[in-house]
Image (cartoon, rainbow, N blue to C red; front, side, top):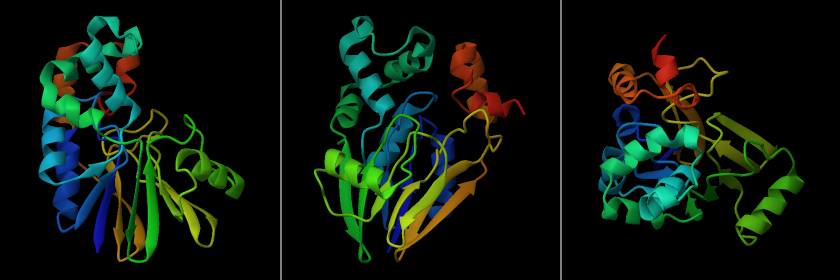
Length: 234
């Protein structure tokens, strides 16, 4: 069995389609959250997710956009300096799209090829799990002690596999959309699991269309630093 693991797509259908062009033979697709916000194509990403029967947990941006859609300007859950992308995404989504985001769970578990997996978007802000004690505490508190040996995380946009013991590990597939500012790589990051074997991947894609949209939105400096628009200038 081949499983595609993606995360932090952030309304970037071009990156998602580039990933799928490489991994279209996958049997299942899982996403570790943040399908929307900080990108121009939220509806296309959600349509893709539904068309490919993708299973996903809810990311913080998925929750923020949903709450602001429902609550309007009174829902001050997004900082003023970060609202341009959220408002842009909200203008393109409808009730069915928001209902899809709202029903995404905080956690998921599944088994494949003899391994037990668990997904959730965030561990602890931008920190990493560095010890077995942290792993066990997190498993007990977030997953009610569910049994699994492979944990899939997102949020940090930093691709990694970290072994805590011979058979216990966590994986971050990285962001399918954009890097942090201290990482000059401009590719889309993701992971695959093929017959139980974990692999990290990256694929190049054309940023120009995305950059043109970002320019039209007149993003402030704070919003630009979060997305692929700063990288596209290179």
